[in-house]
Amino acid sequence: MATVITAKDIEALIARGEDPNRLPADALLTPSAKDVLRDFSNKRTPGPSSPISQSAAVFAKPVSASSSPAELEAFFNSPQMQTLKEQICDIGRRLWQRAYVDGNGGNIAIRVADDLALCTPTLVSKGFMKPEDMCLVDLEGNQKAGRKKRTSEILMHLQIMKRQPRAKATVHCHPPYSTGFAVAGVEPPTCMIPEYEVFASVAIAPYRTPGTPEMGKLVADLVDKHNTVLMANHGVVTWSHNDVEDAYFKMEILEAYCRTVLVAAQLGKPPQTMTPSQLKDLLKIKQSLGIPDPRHGLKECELCDNAEWRPGVVCGIPAKTESGSEGVLDADAEALVKAVTEQILSQKR
Image (cartoon, rainbow, N blue to C red; front, side, top):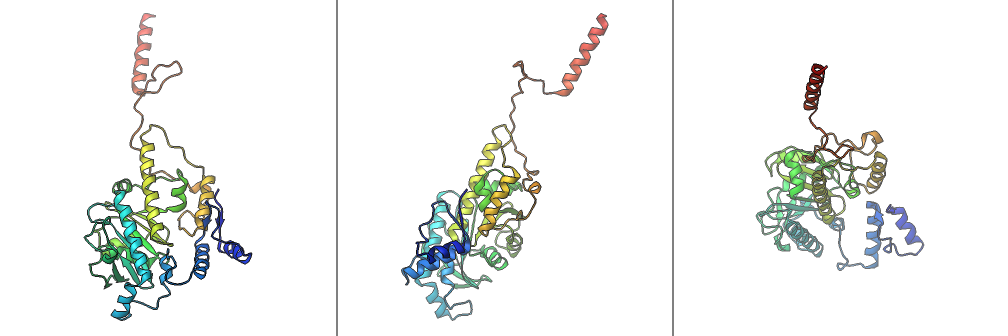
């Protein structure tokens, strides 16, 4: 099992004069541990050239939605914002390359201040965005900077951020396998693959017209306990308390999981699942990482309920008997044969 590293562990390494960046390859850092590690790295390499991997690095900027247009424009064109714009473009290309988006679908947002967010433009393919295409909006959706118009679905991202203060980044797209579950209105079954259990917490939001406040509210109602929401007849949205790449990772994990589940459902055998005890171990890791899940605190007997999952394909080959012949699958036909046989035998007597 991977080692979970806390903020106290990082601080202890620094106090001993050791380099906290030299951690085991499989180490899992809690959010507070990542903050301590980032602060340590920034002190060693100060200045604008320091790598910025989280939008939290921008929070220290004295800017808000009420700042002057000149201040907002300067903030929008700062080196820190350029880094975040490039990150959004990178994630957009990865979404497009993996066929998680089509046409100009999908959108991405990063919170860059208490009441400001950076987001993708409307009517632009996620595979071909440029940093200069990005938009700056307040949490009500009013555009504050950017030459192109902001995405029409930004209200959903902003409602997530307002409802869930820990949400630093959001990604919305239409991955085919996951969206298939959303169209069917079926939550993916649980207790099958560790990565899904640790990093994703999935729920389904009812359908409303994309881009409307009603759609955003239905999604936002779920984000206290879920970081991944299937949007019925539409797609998927994820949020992360770390950064935009982490929000994208959750999308990859969900899509790979849904694809694997559908493949397993076609093999004609019930899938092998984890025991409740094994799942409880994974949920402990999940909780230590600060990832929400409505199953935190439940008893073991309540953890692996897949009652709604109905695999659509079963093996059509008749079962073999011990003698090797095909078993009789129709109980009514078997009873009829038995009755006729008994009737014939009684007449011979």
